[in-house]
Image 1 (cartoon, rainbow, N blue to C red):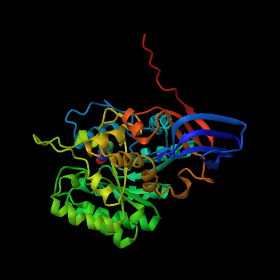
Image 2: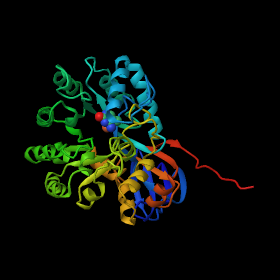
Image 3: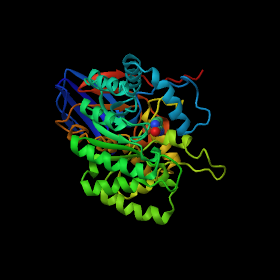
Image 4: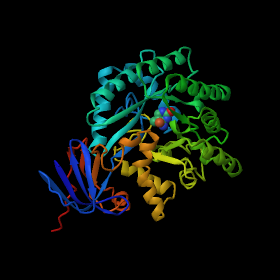
Length: 410
Ligand code: 17E
Ligand code: FE2
């Protein structure tokens, strides 16, 4: 054994010793009798599988203020600003910002990332850059790329061809934005087309779906129906779905039955949707985050994403998944003990399920040794204090170490 981590604590509270060898977890027991070349004593600290960032736009990350700041704070002004900024994208520009963002994430315990790449521009620079990045970083962080038609699949002639080209180039998932298409009919048609493409190219699906406060934006039911009919439920994700928070309860109740049948995944991005949505409201002002608690209670798979790090939609963003989980606890009112624990699952195991990582994710003997240690004794403690991730192990190797802040009273 190359390394033993002693006296850690799993998210479920169990004490654990973990043996690492040749990039894999080779032992996992409360008290390991064996010894190893190197040992680290964790003193009861939380050991978790890595954080999963299931939804981020790496192509626009770190562009805030370019060429201007979002004054209205709306999704639509963000799209306009990005349309201007993306005219000057180069491969090097996108790659540098994406890798800087991935490093920010990895040093805070994120080792699995799903990024959207805008495929609305004829040169497909954003997509090509992120596919290159996926390869450049693969030894220390796993990146999935979604071909995302930011301006709509039917927004301009040629967009459909660009989407197909993106899939041929190797995008992992087909994206969409039905609520932004010119008409409701186009939105419905786009969802059908996305499922056809996913089947034809054997890819995952992750659709920006109903990211608007309009209670009549009802593309989620189309996604769920397509998932039922195609059998692609577990390979399908509906991101944002903020309108679900504005639907009347009678419709929401009916929809929930269909969602349960479809077994699709959900991603909420509470940091940004609490700021983007509700902008046309006076008071009472809507929160604009999807029904996370109710989806979770229904047993559906919900994960959480950052969505943005300093871009036209959100000038903040830290790369810290505990910020995301903390915001979900607040906005979704998931303050019960089991609910806070569920929010930790939403940035770890649930995210892994959304990304369809399968057996390669998790803490068990024989799995790749990807794990993090936190300066906390439980998921609750970690979220409450946004605890420092002190150790990040990727494929059995220590990738980053961070010391928690030291407070000294005089
Ligand atoms: N694009 C979009 O349509 N929605 C978002 N939340 C972001 C980009 C960040
Ligand atoms: Fe997004």
